[in-house]
Length: 254
Image (cartoon, rainbow, N blue to C red; front, side):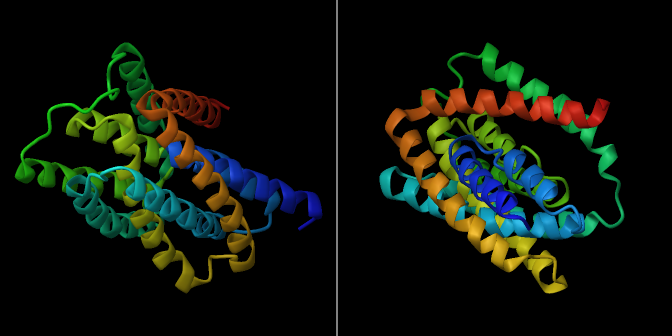
């Protein structure tokens, strides 16, 4: 790679870590940057390297959230366990299922998520009524399984979908939903690496270099989210969801 390509990847990792720590969607930045910088590498290697860089950012963001707020472990842990298993299954499904079937559905869902969030101005600004532990655990397993499979199979917007799900169906505010999403994201990244690494689809040196900058961005994003609260996270979430719609719409209609 040329020096400019390396600098572009490091900057992309920094910005991706920041965005991912606040509202999810870091892959929107990091994956295209890798595709441009590594045109000769197969898609699996691009995705594996992306997951290596991302797992350090999500892990550090989750740790920072856990030190400052009461992380909703009753939701996050069951969702993370289900997501780990189904993310691995999703990664394997890439070989026999066409992603083109999924793309238009994801685009429609993202438009719905964005519209609902904008219309419901109070959504996720404060904690809502929490569910019983049994119901919460059951829902968390279902949400983790569905979004874990999606992240392993397709990926774009998985973190944003997780945040929305935790706000809409668990009564969390955007700040606590983002913290829970980081735990689940860490699990899905770990599952994807468990699939990609043994088959040699990870560029370790590139991934570790990007990880340093991804962590720096994640720590800055988590710090701002914790300082400014749910309103800030909600605003960034709306912007990221809008950008995801533009990106997926362009890919679909171009």
